[in-house]
Length: 459
Image (cartoon, rainbow, N blue to C red; front, side):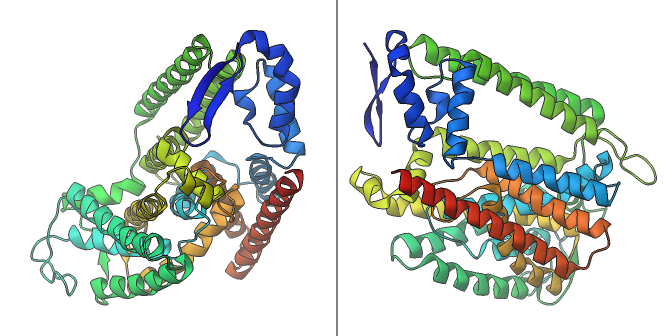
């Protein structure tokens, strides 16, 4: 007998028992091959998992494989052209420089999953950067038109207020899109223009900075991007993360198998854990190499931990919660989701709030990275929205909604950061950087369209 489970969107689902496994293998493999069921929910052995995965790749469901291959190609090509590219110092550099693209791509993914677009994330970042720097200016210091004498906020309060303001921007835009049914393109384009003006009003033409080493709040904001853990603390953090992740994955899958529910084979779980150990060891090992031209700079940068924490939280939200299932359901078929009882306005509004909140986190990092904010730097943030969309799509998120993960933002952001870094090392002018990124974006869009067309033809 097959055990029956229930899914809140699709209704009852049968999980195969051991006695049914042999009979169902062929049908399940065929179902997975056309993308109906994820292979990790069907495989009874590593061999079957790999077979089903390969069938899905051949059927157009390639997942992150193209972008991983893209990362390899970028790495090999630039290493051949410039031998410094794959040195530990430069690899850490690339991740640090890519962090802004990564966070903005994750912010954009919340809208793309709904089949919408958010053109304001770059200026949300710019406004957040200005606000957090202005709030930590010491009392009595000349500041912006809105707070000419400085507010002297502690760092934690300045960051909290900044993130609330950015989330409020998302709430307003999400409400207009979800409740009044205005096109997201128009709403967020208007938001882009308003936020640029608001940021320029706040800065009031007076450059502000985090260079006052006597103000603890400014030092703390500065260290968000430029600070790092000691090598010993870096290894301890890796050990803690590995133990937590390994325990969570192993006991979760083992519990599902004991209860007769679908779960990946134990060998696949072990491989996932081993991959985390290897990847973490490589990252920490690279970061612990002295990357200073003079003096000593070694250890895991704070920025890597922050980006991974955001990735983990948003991945859990989208992949392991009812909210996440509703987001994918709306992006895949909003009418079906509505008929299933999903509150479309509420979910859509929250997606814009979370996207702007993530852009606000990018704004704090942007302020820490730039250190010194001017009118021109704030105006330049409007170009980041295009790179955010490009990073999300290059990473594998669909422009048509319903398909994508926050991990795609990380991978796409790394490709863009790697291209910028590699061409800079080669001394190539900036216009060629934009052309190459545009070519990569068009290739990713083509893959997305072709894979969608293949899915429709198989249906």
